Image 1 (cartoon, one colour):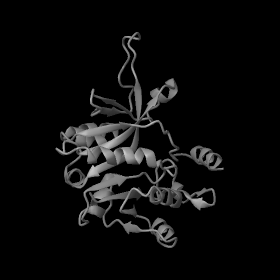
Image 2 (cartoon, helix red, strand yellow):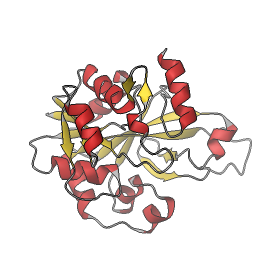
Image 3 (tube, helix red, strand yellow):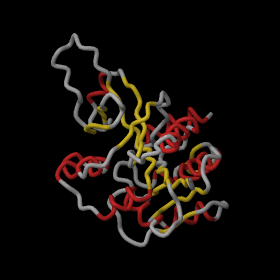
Image 4 (spheres, one colour):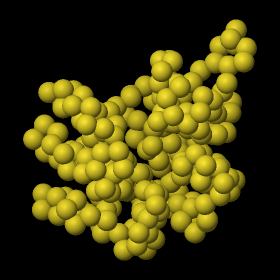
Length: 242
């Protein structure tokens, strides 16, 4: 299989504009993410996909590979789909631009899912982390996922799922990490299909796949990482980098 990684990168993030160009240990966040992804040695190629001249030049001028988006896009999957439409690939892994602490072990687990899927029952795969902190579980910025007994996703939500009506039941809560591995065909299907009510309501693009009957295999990892969504996250990331 030919496997590449695409890193979608918007400059004007809602909560922290310009976050990908902030300094992290002497290099920008997006450059750290790109270099960490390349360093995993898991991919035939790695690209940053962006709508920003600033981000494009940051990657290319430092020896990396970047692609400029042609159209306006509402989500990272759409941006990637446009970029890979004419590429001869089998699997594309979406690494978030604001996650510079990319974990090779977790990405390898995602890729292995497809190597073992001889009947091609999996359209895409993604990561989840077991969480126990009550505040994190209740936080709408923490996207939760519930799975069936074979770890296929049943639903994603900003709400607390499952709701523990019976406190005696030992329920595990999982946080969804926005790292995806797609079959190319599934990604292009996503790009062509219109948004439906659940995705529009929760503002979670992965729900579009479930609403159209796609199968998402969830892979558990114990690596939390640091997602840089706020200036406080960046401060934590710099401390961790040191």
